[in-house]
Length: 150
Image 1 (cartoon, rainbow, N blue to C red):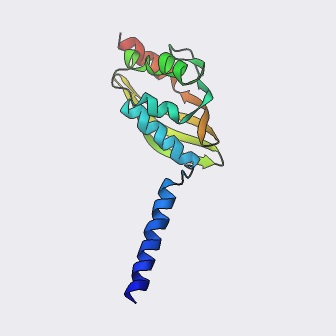
Image 2 (image 1 turned 90 degrees about the vertical axis):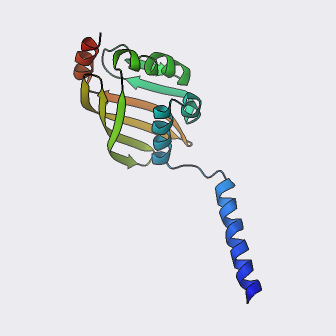
Image 3 (image 1 turned 120 degrees about the vertical axis):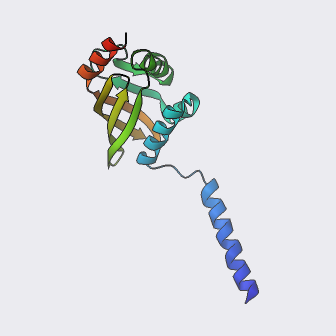
């Protein structure tokens, strides 16, 4: 009986180790969660690894970071580097999330110095990587806060 019990325990440990090391792909929602975690931590290498090489990162509106940015390097330089300059203490807090197949839409509270508003972010995940991102931001509130922060 002890041998059977020990065998069952060893089989369960082996199965657990195999699952952890099998490189199982994250769900689209999990990829998005990791993207927000790495962004918030300032881990741009980790953030970049979650995105495809042909990433299209789109910020709507007419703000300093607006436009369609190709690749992670352009996004980091033209979007992420701009945020703290115009919106000190920039922060995103998730309010809700909607996932349909490989599309994830996140409803967020966006805050910074002189800013408190909401936003929607849309992600498309292909082969376990974020291939496109579009921010539907409250650009008027962001513009007013940017002017106040000068």
